[in-house]
Image 1 (cartoon, rainbow, N blue to C red):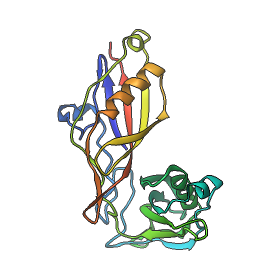
Image 2: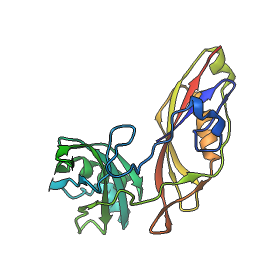
Image 3: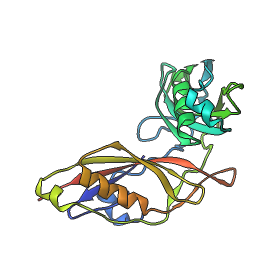
Length: 241
């Protein structure tokens, strides 16, 4: 998840999206590829080296809903999650989306996985896992495949940045808060399928959404080929006067 802070009268997009002089006031962009053997800033490890991989003990196929059968599409969803020291996934999210009903089914199936947890020097540690589901039709089970490498895809990189206006009425109301916008970066580097994960107020939400729609990205890639990827951005609207 990227985060960016919004100050009146404008909101600036996240660090790493073009305004490096705001990095002192903004949280660093999330890294999904910490070094093996070293945790990231959240204490999550990557499998490799002395970090031994978790062992899958229980799984279920992604269940087909009636809507999925009506769509009758074929494709792959890549999901990521944090596997805790109890062997249970949490924080599950879609990295490489397909079609929304299929994405939801993949997330639900990932949450049902159970593991013997990863270990580092014999001690249980949380690790990031990556799970693939390939949907080939409702007559075939979409079973989870655990991707062991720590970097199944290269995440998208923003090529530009825009200011988002801090709405005048919101400033008068002294209104502040976090707007979370979730979207898919296409293979062409365009943000599509925007939806609000967390709302503040209609005018603030709309300002954040307008700014995100103007972003352009170098798309995510896998094996050197562009692929769609899921991104969530936090916009924090703050007032200091």
